Length: 245
Image (cartoon, rainbow, N blue to C red; front, side, top):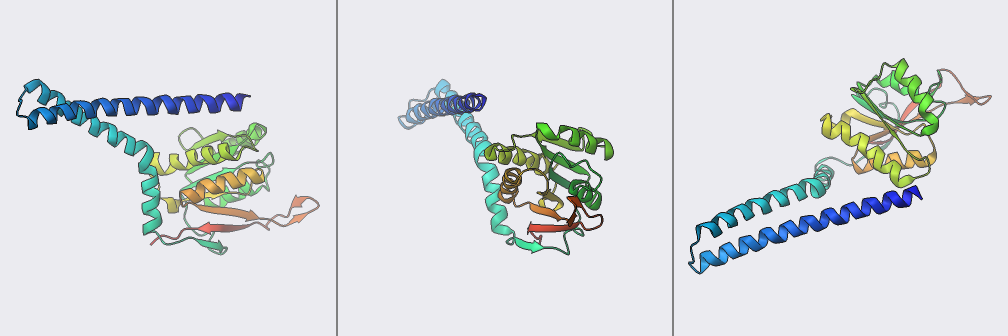
């Protein structure tokens, strides 16, 4: 029921925001049109010219704001897809050698264990910034990782998702990636999203967010014995990789 309420509130907000946007745009267009009509008919009125100029500026600001909010992220991704070469799939040897400034991880309840894939990839890549995608059940593992790697609010962020809500996982994973690329201004080639931890749906949602932004994804392959990972058997793979020019 809470999901339904959240969806209704989100839809209502978008509807009201869109309605106000079009109302302001229509008002600005009306003022601008009346000012142009007065100018064409040579009915020079300073107040009409002033109102028309202000309406034009308001309309320009509204259009720029709309472009920034709705179109700019898509435009950047389209331009990136046009200019950057296509992805490569299945690289193994280069995975641990590529320099990374930021890492995003999907967490499981065992992520804090000494032999976990999450600890391995953090120690291997040594990122300056870390994003964590977890659930209510992984909060203890998150706290342990934060303590072990001295993570704080400046160099890390955590999002809590429902492990079976694919849409939410994709959206919140995208928030972490946008934090790294838009707020911290990190290059996409310096970011990697590791899909090893968490549920299959969590990995899928995070993967979709990374694919949309052309961010590399990694996976840690481990040999198991007696239901325990074999020490030293970790291998870091790149399911997808977007090489730079």
